[in-house]
Amino acid sequence: MRILIYGAGVIGSIWAGKLAGIGIDVTVLARGQRYHEILDSGIILRGAYDLRNERYQVKVIEELQENDLYDYIVVTVQKTQVDSVLPVVAKNRSERIVCMVNNASGYETWAETLGEESLMVGFLSAGGERQDGVVEYFIGRGAIRCFQTTTFGEYSGAKTARLAELIGLFRRAGIPAVGTSDMDGWQKTHVAIVTAIANALYKHQCDTYRLASSQADVKLMLDAVQEGLLVLKRLGHRLTPSKLWYMNLPTPVLVPIWRVFLNTKMAETAIARHTRVARSEMQQLQREFDTHISLSGVATPAIDQLRPYLFS
Image (tube, rainbow, N blue to C red):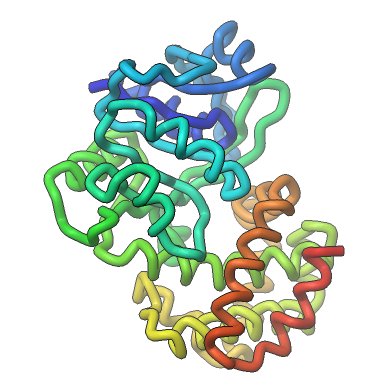
């Protein structure tokens, strides 16, 4: 099996390394300094908790050729890059394109570009930070799966053999993964939650420990989350996955739990590090979600109070 990881940032590097580690023929598309790092040293991962280095040899390319065929092309770029990347991918003749990109605006444009039959969608439960060619990372396992598990789906929502195969590949690589028939609802729910968290973090210079110290701002963050979920409900979207039901509990119940979580290295690794380097992506996601707010007619005072910290 041949897999191309299109994008060599933190997520692309994690996926490439872990899939290569179970014997998959992995190629990574990278550019600039990152291309040379992988060419010279391979993918180097360091566990965020055990700080043990793992090195994986993969192929690396700078351009995708039309006739270079893969069983799956996995696109792992930021939302701000996807519109320029997908037309390039569409010229390639591979038939299974998995877009693992933050998205609150739906998949219609992606399907038009890639073809409805080719498009698959997914999202990660992983994160970290890349420095000097080494990716310090975590993968969503154990308790973190109460919040998020790596999830895949077909554009059509159907259960297919290739979807089961893809989920199985990631599980073999040690990455817990599940499927859903409603990736669009899943991603809209995700954006409703992460934009509120990110905007609260921007108020505190992306420091989870500082945010945790402010009971008022943790409550404001959770109020913003619940406003976002109400927006989606008003527009007819289900809370997806349903295991996130607890995010609708009264905020006096949630605030102490989130203050404890925000005081952990897991929160710093999983949330703050990405937030620091992804402000432009978060701005685009907020604009997309603001469209839903306008359509819903829901009042969002907490979101309105946090939004300026994102754009300041």
